[in-house]
Image 1 (tube, helix red, strand yellow):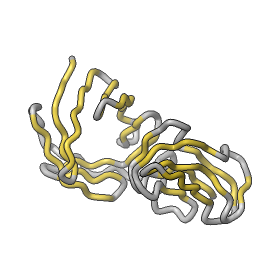
Image 2 (cartoon, rainbow, N blue to C red):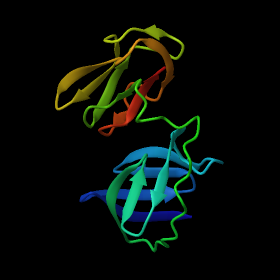
Image 3 (cartoon, rainbow, N blue to C red):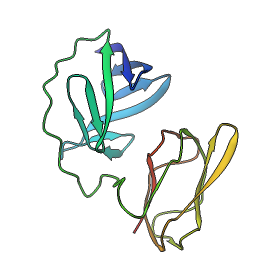
Length: 161
């Protein structure tokens, strides 16, 4: 069953088309599924999400939310507990997107040793390339992006442990 609606998050409108697990937001396709632990998988990356009547809480961060053009039942489940597979935005080794943009290069891979200050990926935003660096010495636990991915501010890009 195909559903089309408009989602407004923090005052920004996003046209959405959903059919099964295929979801297109603002013309960009995603695969969205529910994980057994209650988290939401977006293109295979787990996020803790709780929906309330006029608010969505994603990875602990609240967003004002409105949906138009679709009937929504607001029966919000309790936020799921963090899973071992969910990216930990608060972890000391998480490298986050500093602003919305596009990943142009990924410079590390899981299992690779890095030192604090080593470049891990390049984010293009506002026609400038921003090299993002490891905040600590360690081993790359996970890489959550690939070249060409559009990312929002504060998205976990790389985890270092």
